[in-house]
Length: 441
Image (cartoon, rainbow, N blue to C red; front, side, top):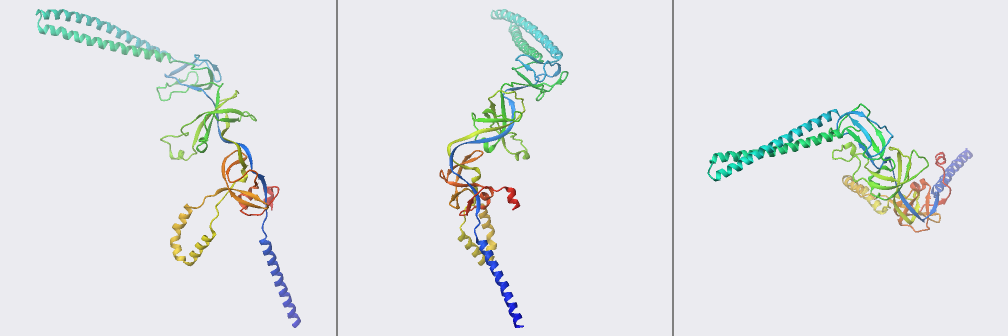
C-alpha cells in the first residue's frame, strides 16, 4: 500500500511539473517579439504632376439650335441629318399663305393711312390760309371777334388732325414692316457653315414659333471641325483648374489613343444650381462644367464619352515617397494622466457617474485627429515619423516636411503599414505575401 501511494504521488507531481513546464514555455513564446515582414524604398527626388480626372462628353465648340420665330406647317425641308450646309442655305420653308395675307392687309392699311395724311395736309393748308386772311381783316376791324375766333379754332383742329394722320401713317408703316418681317421668317436660312448634327422635325409637321415659350426645336447645326470635351469636376478639384492648363483626353470610341487638349472655360456656378432647387437635388454631389478644347483633328461625333486628365499642379525636383508608404496614426496620449483618471474614477465612482457625461462629450469634440506618418527604417526596427504631404500623382506623394533625401522607409505591404506597424516595432525585409496565402494561413 505504501509503495502504491508513493507511485501515485510521483505521478501527480510529475504531471504538475510537466504542466508548469508547458506553461513556462508558452509564456516564453508569447513574450517573444513578433517580427513583421515589410518592403522598403528610398526617399528620392522626382518631378510630379497632379492630375484631376473627370468624365464627360464630346461636343462641338459652336452649335446653333434652329427654332422658327413664326408658327406654321413645314412645306419644304431640303436637308437631312449629316448634311453639310453653308451660310445662307435654305433649311426650312414654313407655309407663307397667312403671312402673305397679313402683309397685303398691312400694306392696304398703310396706303389708306398715307391717303388720310394727304387729306389732312390739304385741310390744314386750307384752314391756315383762311385763318391768315381773316386775321388781317380782324386787325382792320372788318370782321368780328367771333368770326376770327372760329377760323382760328378751325386752324388748330386741322393741325391736330394732321398730326394724328401722321402718327397713324407711321403706325401703319410699322405694322407693314412687321408683316413683311414675319413673312421673311417663313424661310429659315443657315446662320453658319456647318453640319446638321440633329434633325427633330419632319416635312408636313406643324411647328410653334419662339413667341410660344421656347418654340419647336427643328434641328441643330454644328461646326464639327472644332470640338471640345465638356466634363464635370467636383467642387474640391475645380479650384485647381485654370484656363490654359493642358489635358489628356481618352475617347471611348478611339481605344488605345489619347488626345491633347487645353482648358478654355470653367463654369462659375455648379450644374443644376437654382434658387428653386429641391432638397433632394441639394444632396447630390456638386459638379462644375469645364470645357477642354481638343487640339487634334479627328472624326468625333457629338455625345461621345470622354475621360479627361487635367494637369492641375506641377512640382520639379520634389522630395517624394511611394503613395503606399503614407498612412495615418493617432497622436500618442499621456499614459500617466490616463491612469490617474481611472484611479480617480475607481475611488469616487458615484461622483464620476454624475459628471462624466459632459467630460466625455468635450473629449469627443476635442479628440485628436489622425496625422500622416511614415515609418523610417532604423536597422531592424522602425520609427514613426509625422510628415507633411503636398501634391501627388498616381504613384508618389510629395513630402514637404519630416524626411530627408536618401532615408530608407517602409513602402509595403499594405497590412503592415496600415495595421501592424507601430513606433519601435521589429521588422525584416522580405517579398510581399499574396493576400490569398494570408487568408489560407
